[in-house]
Image (tube, rainbow, N blue to C red; front, side, top):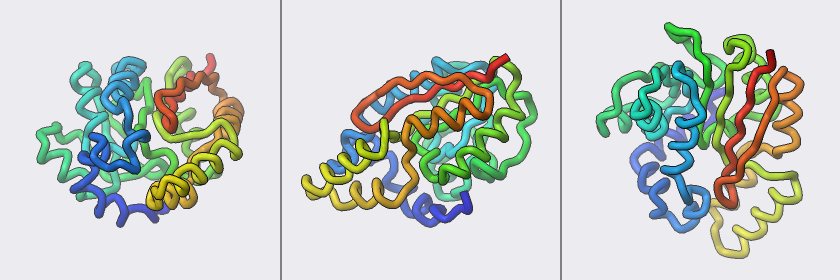
Length: 213
């Protein structure tokens, strides 16, 4: 990931939970159904979970509540501090999608929420390849993130945001590496995973990728 977004994470740490709660009009649709999205990731996860981009610990807490064993990876000290201040147990370790310490258990699931778009397509492929080497046959990757059916759908949302005066949202959609479903599906297939996609709101989908036997 190159950690080029690290300053953004540190800056966003204090207000992130307000944003996901729908208090920011520009991101209201992006985070519509947020608690249900996190709960669905936890439901799809196995018992030994490697989590990337833990942030303020919302998904971490959902996983722990579901009695999962969690090894969280988060590059932002400010985000980790915010999670601990909320009482989320300290299961966090410094790292990112591409560079992280080995968990003390064999993960059966790799999860992330609202974070995989910080990687370029090439970095996404590198990350998925790494997880394929870590996971056992039948192991899963479960990610929730903003993604689009294709580039035309992506551009349509940028135009829609600009028309609504949502300049920050439009900038995010233009500058970060939100994946196209067709590209992401191809990457997973090439790395030995079968995939399914479920749309959760106008922006966010859950992809569940299972490592083939």
